[in-house]
Image 1 (cartoon, rainbow, N blue to C red):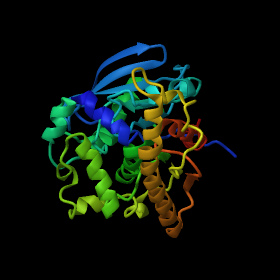
Image 2: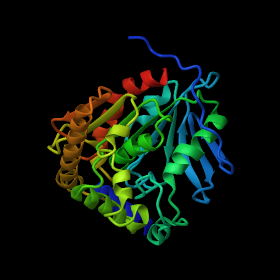
Image 3: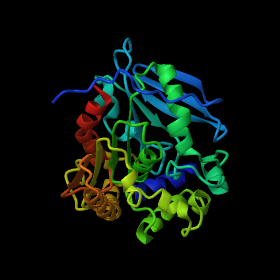
Image 4: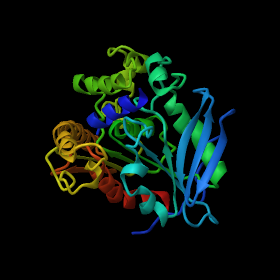
Length: 341
């Protein structure tokens, strides 16, 4: 059941460098703790107990080659599948190799499918059944309060953090920065839609949650509830912290990664032509919507006089991993500078 749902999700969703010596560390939350860790070269698979969700959460940590001195941390979020399938940063991009020589810890949650990485008002029986967990989704609390102190203690970090995410999580990272404005020094959003409370945005959010078998009213209540506006980064743009922010999307038109030369369309037992067609048609439509949201968010921040937001609307590109890898590379210098690397 989980494999089928996640496969469906992939089809649709498919100068001077500052030195920080006094970064305020997140305070430990009682009960949150490291449960397990298994290391292979620079990759560490860990599980962390979340008191707010009353379960352990799997995460992947990419460690710097030199662990003798503290390093900052980049929290890198997956999309609608939450990393619970093969559509994740390690499986679809060069993230592990890209960060191997960089002095940073990269923390990738391997759960959170269809959750929007937000705190839900109620447990959800549908997600509990299909994702085989207890249905408690308190991801803002976990990511901003419970997890950082555990990571800082386990890996002797500098306490300086950045945040990035794609698609569903491209929306989430902007909201997380608003909810925890002191936690991150930089944020990058790739192919997200910041407009979650207007009719189009609500429809898209509802679609993603329903794909996992969830009830969106358990997340933010009825669509008329104030919670939808509270978690709309476009509406709440005035609350974005004054830190370097990168938002990007393609237009949806086919680009360099939308060809049969793209190794990601070659999956055993499946037709590359069918995968590519889906990527261009479905992924193109989704990305066009993301571009609309991204352009609107850029305009909104300009109206607010914000000069800390970099907007990158690519002339081509669908809702797919090749472009998110490109975005990670393009936004890294901004994040690295903010992290003090």
